[in-house]
Length: 353
Image (cartoon, rainbow, N blue to C red; front, side, top):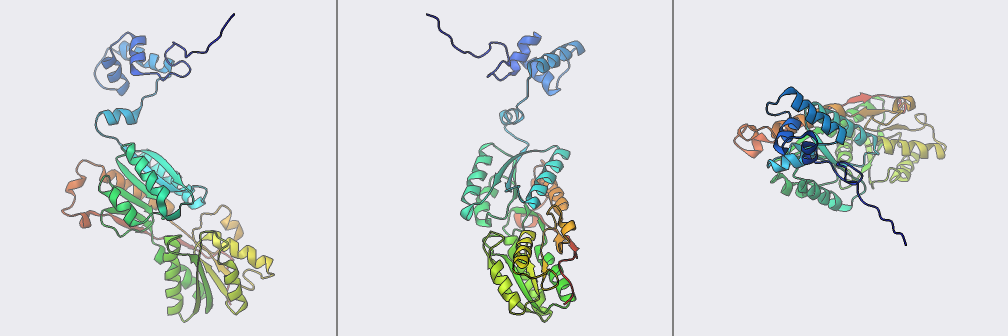
């Protein structure tokens, strides 16, 4: 009778085995301490010794576990990033820019993405997981978690919100100036002569950014003498669209949407209902990140993603610097708040009455 069995390779770095510093040291014929210093670029060695150690590390496929090394030293330069579903172009671009900026500044990001999340429970769990990795700080790039949920974590590590405004003491922000964006869009609609307008957005607990934009739109329109129908809908872009078109049939000449996704949903529904845009109804959005938005001629506002990402990472780097605690005498004075204003894109989906 014959039998067969499978086993892990005895060769360092063989299938199933992770190459360690000890493996590299043994292969190079040096002590573990010497190999460690050489791989970190520390200490002084004969050139041939360091070359031999690095050559063996490359041959064996050794990869240094940066986080483990930092944990052993009682610290970590890794920053946790919690991001809303990156399938949304605005969040996808923000993710890319945060990664690029972190790399440029020598910070490592470990990222958790969150999709649909009722009342932020999954996001709170994600923050606990990130803290379990001993991250040095947190960048939160989602509006779906409240200040009350974030504040307990601010007692443990520096937190920077990227994109959404925050008022809680001790939580720093690099955010879009959504009230200004709503005002800019509404002023444009008023300049086109519209005085009966629908404002369609997600409710405050669905999207705080949309809520801020819509509130500013309404205030600006009312101040300009317009009649406003404000619709607060759910998270799905199609929610509230039927009500918006009903208002159009009752005389509204423009539908202002708090996001480009909602704008597209209104345009699709308008076409299905036999209404032309902008002939029968003008439609606006906000974000300006959707691929092809320029070809579609969307009237929107391009949010300053690049500026927010750069400021968020710069703020985190500054908060992690050794002398950060000496920059101010109180938490309220040292909390960083940076707002960034985007650019109006007039487009062709909104026209004069």
